[in-house]
Image (cartoon, one colour):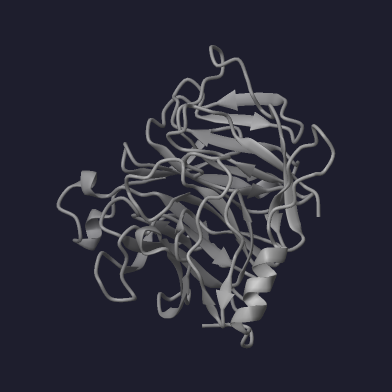
Amino acid sequence: MNRRTFIAQSTAAATALAATPVINAFAGADPLYGHNGMTYKQVNGWGVLDNGKYPVNDCHEMVQDRRGRLLLLTNETRNNVLVYNTSGKLLTSWGHDFPGAHGLTLAGEGRDEFLLITDTARHQVYKTTLDGKVLWTLDAPLESELYDKAESFIPTETAVAPNGDIYVADGYGRQYIFVYDAQGKLKSWFGGKGEGDQYFETAHGVCIDHRTDTPTLLVTDRPRQCFKRFTLAGELIEIIALPGACVCRPVIHGTHLYSAVLRSPDMDTAGSGFVTILDENNRVVSNIGGTPPVYTGDELQPMAQQSSLFVHPHDVCVDRDENVYVPQWASGKVYPYKFERVS
């Protein structure tokens, strides 16, 4: 793996102590969350709407478009997509046809921006405009002969490569990563459920990592608490271990990688999630609502929730000002939380 040089255990312990979340000393001040110069304060009440008019169920994912608007995907069919400005004002809403709305990917440039939506209930992937017009639909890849029925295909996430190829993760199905061309024609696949490093248990999320000259594909293996890096041809490069963190999709912003941690490894533990942030060397540098990252040499020690901010955080959206938005799954139908970058 791509790791920094050796750090002595005593130094790591001292760093962890220094990285404890800062709590403002002034009476009534908002607490700060995070570590190592990446700290945040929560913006109370951000994005809360009249749930009689604009209800949410599971708030699955969120992206920011070129106009600075924030698009939230929920599996509530009275309004599958809520569109906010960064102040939390609702601008518009759309969508009534995605009961299993789960993955939301923004791709394209300028006027050609588009969305990819995965629906775990309808077993399909949709390409839409930013105002909800469906451009085309991907059905279950029965032509691969990996499925005997469409219902076995349960797509959770997509990613778009620089050449326009679309990667689809069957994260709740049979754990394959399918590769389509820009028009939706199936080209290849890799992965699948299995015990070897190149296989997955829950390939929940995918993204293109463009931080180096040669783009690669990051794939979540959530129960195994790691991200797996592949070439765009599907060859395994490395495993980024994140002990204590059942991570959702990886999100690249600038030189950092962000991810919501749905929960601790204990499948029965609710209210154990947090947000983790890694640097360009795959080292965790900050946890929002989580314990400080501690390394023994190059080995990350198990992380856990420290502040009861979240129940089941499911995604992270980072805006142009480095503020963080966190949608949540199965968390009492709460609207997304906003955390303002402080340092």
